[in-house]
Image 1 (tube, rainbow, N blue to C red):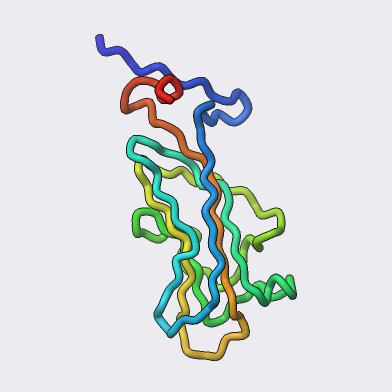
Image 2 (image 1 turned 180 degrees about the vertical axis):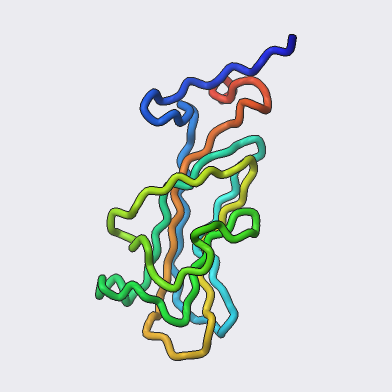
Length: 156
C-alpha cells in the first residue's frame, strides 16, 4: 500500500498550512502609455510544487488618492491574469474596486501549482487622461503542495 505524504500542520481557524509564506508585490508607475499599451503593476510566480491563494488586490491612481470619489478610470482597463489567462471577475475593470491605502475587501482565489499571477493596467483609447500615475498590489500566501512528496515544513 502506498504511503500518503504527511500533511503539514495547519491553522485550526482557516486551514492554511503552518508553512505558508506571504507574497506582497506592488509598483507605482507614471502613466505614459499609448493606446493599446499596458503596464505590469505586480507579478508573482509560485515556485514549482507550491500552490496558494490570492487574498488581496489594491489599485492606485493619483486622482483617486486625492479625491476618493473618483473610482472610475475612463480610458484605462485593469486586468488580473493567471498563467496568461484573465481571472474572472477581474478581467476588464474600468474602475477601482480596492483603493490602495484603504482596507480592501479580502478575496480567496486558489492558485494552482506554479501559477504566475500578473496585475496590469492598459490604456484602451486616445482620450486625454487626468490620471498621471497608477499602481497595483497583490497579496497572498503560498505553501508546499504535499501531493508532491514529503512535508515541506520539515525541509526548510
